[in-house]
Amino acid sequence: MLFLQYPKCSTCQKAKKWLNAHQAVYTERHIAEDRPSYEELKQWHEKSGLPLKRFFNTSGVLYKEMKLKDRLPAMSEEEQLQLLASNGMLVKRPILADDNQILIGFKEAEWAEKLGDSGNIDTM
Image (cartoon, rainbow, N blue to C red; front, side, top):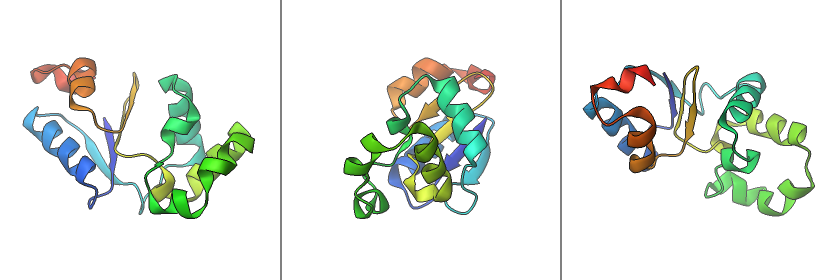
């Protein structure tokens, strides 16, 4: 599993603590220093089945400074993906990705349901 996170993010810290408590096997990646590529984001979006807007960090300073709430509806999917790939701080975090599924943001109940609340977490 790939765990994309921002170390100062309290939600990411909770997610990491949860993963470690469940003995998950994952590779950690700093979302701002090693931001997701356009290709990764496109693949994750397609695999997730979620609206692309869910990939945006809507509570982030950069999102608000860029007034993306008003701009996104007029942007094509291609433009949105390019924008997300341009700065890791625009991307919702944490992201947990593997070959089978993508989890965006941390909701403990959702992660427990999708990953299993037992020692089987490494088989996501």
